Length: 367
Ligand code: GLY
Figure 1 (tube, rainbow, N blue to C red):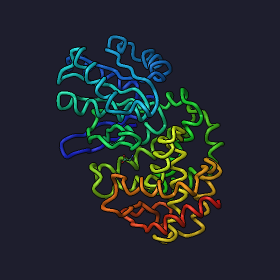
Figure 2: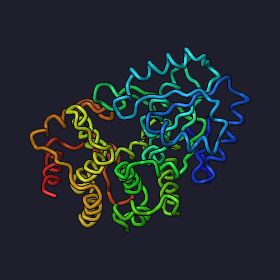
Figure 3: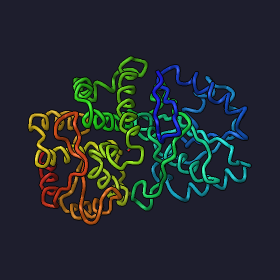
Figure 4: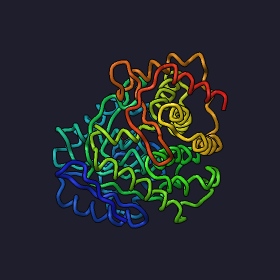
């Protein structure tokens, strides 16, 4: 299956999904080996151990590519690691015509994309996302970035990859919690844009979905639908001036929860923070954008069953509020949300008052 995304008017890149993705990747790399001065592949400790061998079995030519590796975890998504990689590229004779292949989850594709976008003012890059979040979100749409202190993606760029190759087989290498985390982003994508997809997804509780083997057609369908929706959105608004903000549903509150947890050195999974953010922002949606309370019940029932409830403390409310005010998506002191007017229809730029936000947190504590 091939989907194409028009990132900017002059560039178009393929997103290949399924078993055939690796065959297409092999062809792409064969072309690059002729055209490019040098190929690099970036992995983290996990993908070097669990994914690279699988990839090399299918594409043995990759053994000749120069390896770059970093530790795994959100903490390495920093300017410090970016500097380390720029220096490594420099010392290994990378030039403007080199290619950086990123094999990993969102941390690797965001960081690798950022490093590629800025090394020698930009070299070509290819993403091979290995986590569910990477496959359906982080690697799609050309956003790159690193965190600053605990604030996520504070420095970054838009840099379209030359191709994204999504092979569901990599999902087998993931701990179950990581797959669950990715399902929160899948649900978000359905909720903002496609009621039918939401109905299909939410027919099964999360723990049942996690029992389905990755070789089952279910996963291909899930990847295909989620990526299709994301590509439709970013094709129309690559630089997040407008409709791309739809993808922020659950993230205004979710990022504040995640950043605070990072600051306290008790990190939570991105998907768990987003699930809590979607639950709170669904309460806001009833108040602000007229979400039907029955739909609210359906959303929060599925979320709670699959993701549980995070132990959010009431005394942290003002810190969370402060973090939301400093979120790069906001202007002046206003806190803006993407909310739902109904399942399948997100609404961007919804300003909510501190009282409305506190009220939504109150409802979450009482779930
Ligand atoms: N992850 C949200 C976006 O790509 O815009």
